[in-house]
View 1: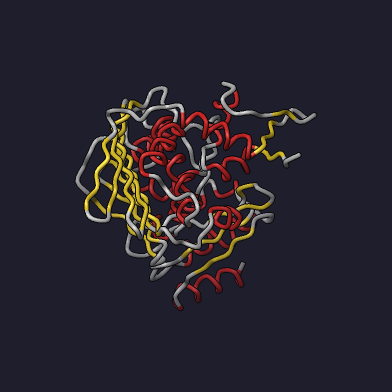
View 2: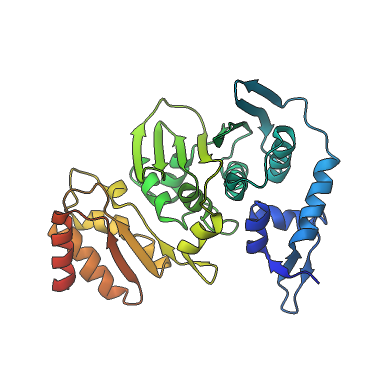
Length: 340
């Protein structure tokens, strides 16, 4: 008898969001069983067979457009968000573009795509989304643009932030969601670390993460309604989604994070305790916090003291690990740690 797995492992195996799997199982579209403790478990092969059969019996929408230009093939479609099942969109893309399920990108892109489309369905408050998926011999990429309220505005209102730029910083922490009962706040966090290039734009602001270069940026772009997300990944990537997942989890629990300190900057340098408190807000949810000081030129005594003495003393069960510090930042941080 084949091994039965829990919902999280199945989600990573078939590239679907956990919420999608629950809906499919509740509707009887995919098979599942219950353990004596009431936990739902699945046979991966049986689920894959059920999804394949469903895809085979469905006809591609006439509204989808396939274009071939040079060595690039693309699929484009505008979808209605209410009631949309993201896995059906993904299965249509796979079928119409004849995606190679054995290449490196096929391990990450399905999960990233379904996570981001699920965010548009559940969070955007929009009515429709324009989706484009492009394939070249070298890269796979997709873009999802919804007509909703804008992710940065929504985060700002939900967490009572001062401006939309602070929303970028909050999202970089992980476990930040406007719908905690339905979502864990992991989708954007893990997707931004799994693909080569990740862009999230709304409200005239764009957050870009380039994992190939180990770089990030936040800048202003032309205002457009809703939210745009773009992801790109090398076809032959050796990166595995499970490896990215394991980097921030212990026993499948999301307990590690790595916020980018630079995103919390309000001036030229970090000098105030208030900046430190804003950075630390919500990090008590994690057991291990890597504070990434990449691009931070200097920090003040108050900022360091608030983190490495005050907060650390109140959270003795948490592990703070400063990384990517220049000599000046390292001197102040080590002075603060020793002094604490």
